[in-house]
Image (cartoon, rainbow, N blue to C red; front, side, top):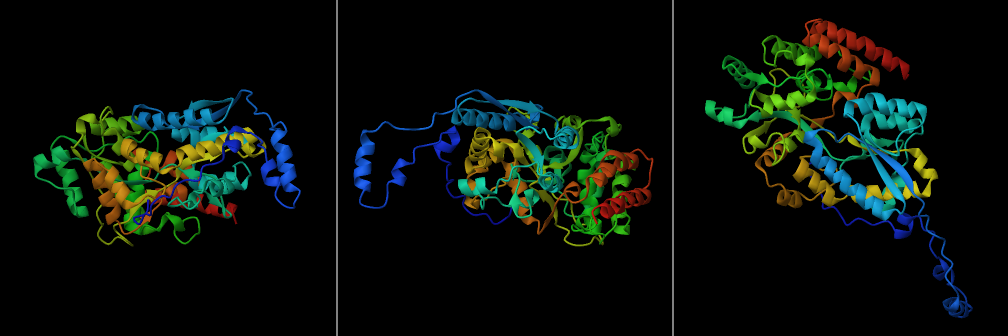
Amino acid sequence: MKKSMTLLLSLIFVSSALLTGCGGNNNASSNKGDGNATATNSAATNAPATEEPVNNEPFEMTIRHTQIGADKQKRLAILEEVVNKVQEDVPGLTFKLDGVDSDVNRKEKLRGEMAAGNPPEIFDLFGSPDSKIYAKEGKLLDLTPILEELGIKDKFSNLDPFTYEGKIYGLPIGGSGEGFFYNKEYYTSKGWKAPTTFAELEQQLADIKADGKVPLAGASKAGWVPLMLANHLWSRYAGPDVTAKFATGEAKWSDPNVVKGFAKYKEWVDKGYFKKGELGFEYAEYTTQFTSGEAILLYDGTWKSSVFKTGQSGEGLIGKVGFFNIPAVEGGAGDQTALMRDVNNGYGFSASAEKDPRQLAAVKSFIKNLFNEEMQLRGLVEDGVLPAMKIDQNVLNENITDDLMSEIVGVLNNSQSSFPAFDSLVQADVTTEISNIQIQKLIGDQTTPEKMGEALQKVQEEANAAVE
């Protein structure tokens, strides 16, 4: 979400003829012209209509989503509402909802289905680099004409992650930023406020540890979880633009400042700032450590704010959670206020829909009913997902009613720049190396920051050579 937002204009709804698969009667438009038109029109009024029949035959489409688990129930409810609306719009349509873990969907199921040429008709899609790879292979539906028809092509804050050769192949469902959630109640008991310097942050971590508490929630069975924080650390030391330079060869994973980021993460591991045994914990446990009060800080995406709402797992911490950005590190490169922000999570559509008018009608209805101001605001208010579409700041202010989300928006607005997560900037082989091997080896004391940088750079150079 960009700081400067403009009011979302009314959507241009697709005609009911398209949404129902009806051919329509174009006689009226064809009777314009010479003086015989009047006689022709008069005769037409007495003639029976010749509309093509609506195809009401039952058909099924699959939606692969990642809204599974207790903390994603509100997100799933929004999707289910959209599903019901689309089924009403398109005669004969029944959707099958296929819920899969996001990591499994991205790295296993969807990759295999794309290779076999049988992806679901609608699916959770990661923007860059995934959408560009699948678009290049002809696996994704070109959404450009649909967005133009619906009048929403220019209503998104950023479609770059889903754009390939000037065409749009996916849509972001929302935006996110990453930073520290902290237990305000504990901080107040210590007379603390959110740290404004890196030294202050490290002193707080040490004091929390000395107090017998877990300073930082930890769950590293899935490598992307610890890499959220590690990514921000190496971006503080080496600059927010460094990761984008790995694939171009302008920077290396083994550069001293990048290694400093790895070293700082390892230092925090060695000092016992994360819960012991974190390599065996799943992401759900990561959240529980914080909501239970066991861990005082949780580095996560802004989407996590959804758990601190009535009826959710963090309900007991409503009004007791704050959010802050990582403070500047001494001697760090580039903008030290930079925040990890992206719009990489969204939906894609199988290219096969273009050959089936009813599937195409369903895709148009799905986009119309999900990607609009109402649903974007509901995602923000109910689920803590930042809008991916442009919404007037006054409208946002009117809809943000809880203190935590207001605090998050304030942190986002105070950052002077942003950078995307590493896995949207480097090749899949590099992502696999750091997510499935190197970060766990670092945490498990099986490698050093220097060796980690060297190993990653070797894979990076092989990946770079493969695309030359």
